[in-house]
Image 1 (cartoon, rainbow, N blue to C red):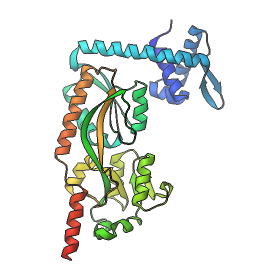
Image 2 (cartoon, helix red, strand yellow):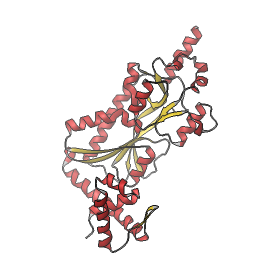
Image 3 (cartoon, one colour):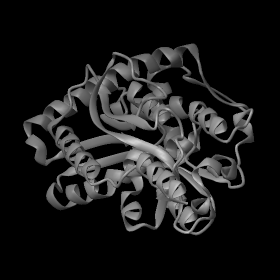
Image 4 (cartoon, helix red, strand yellow):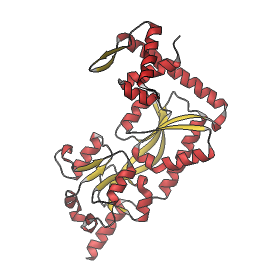
Length: 324
């Protein structure tokens, strides 16, 4: 008999093409995963994988089995969600993804609220780039995603629930030398300081290269690329790096004055659309809908308390320069 468990093991291994990475995701030892795959091959009497020094590859039989495995696992997940719906919102599993910037703005208060008020909801959270999260949505391994989607707009296969936009810009610590530079000279002075940012898609790299007046994005003066807003913020607060971030992800240090937005437009798209995205054909379970509702509340509450943006800073600098 072929079990859902072995099909899920095979699906993850086919995705990762690496036993140790797949075993880590499945919380198994490599030997246990190997035995599970061997048991699946024995029960089907086919070889699913070619194993060589260059890595793992699916055999023709493996590709056919994987196609059926995806359908079976999707139906099993749909059945699980249907049963969960009979229990209401108090219990159930929710798998969500979040982009690095949106997650920094809502994830901690969300998980605190769920742990306190909805202990029956079990959360799994993936924090990744939108491109990576999009791949997970396509594979049906997440219920929904919260992400800034301008670099890769979702197809009509997905439903979008708009959230307050995110506002991207360049930030430095209070007292940074750039804050003493006049507005007209600021862009030229920027070239003397290195950048700290999340892992950047090509579009963002090109926009930064244009801001730095560089011929190619490979020449960007990157000091740090890291998908942790807390880490980027700590480095920016304790050095002279310039941090690329969205205001909504660092609203508390912004309000406290420890970090300051430079009066420079990062691009013509400083306001970025943020959405909750899920498959149009996938009905969200009551627990997932409850989590979505809490996220919407947190994001709207956060947007209403945001300090002023770069337009206010530019106006203030220009006013000071005219007075001088």
